[in-house]
Amino acid sequence: VGGKGWFYDEIFGRVKALELTDEVHFPGFVPAEDLPLWYNAADLFVYPSVYEGFGLPPLEAMACGTAVITSTASSLPEVVGNAGKLVDPTDTDGLATAMERVLGDRELQEQMQAAGLVQAGGFSWERAARQTVHSYRHALTPGEDRQGV
Image (tube, rainbow, N blue to C red):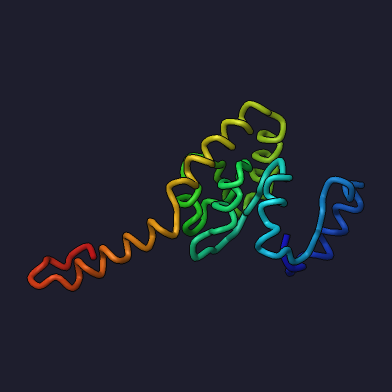
């Protein structure tokens, strides 16, 4: 899901050469309101990003009950927690092994799906807003210690 990216031709060519065009889909841009349909239809969500400011797509996938494999980089370990598998984004063999393991073990996949729903439940815009308001109130309170704010 998404734009073509830098390696689109190479990846698309590999999928075609391996005769996986019926199993691997390249839909291009998908409107936000349609993303839950794609997440729910997926057996696994893989997000080997090297840099993320937050990592919303893995969180969205977990909220839809999809098992997640993502990278050890940036904020992704905090977002996914113990609910997903974490892999070095430059380790293609490790990524392939993790994918094979999750897709080959239905019980593991179901455990990851359940854990992902719990993990995603800890994130909400309402909670983020409450924490932001709390931080501002703390910062504006006269005489308060400002360390850790």
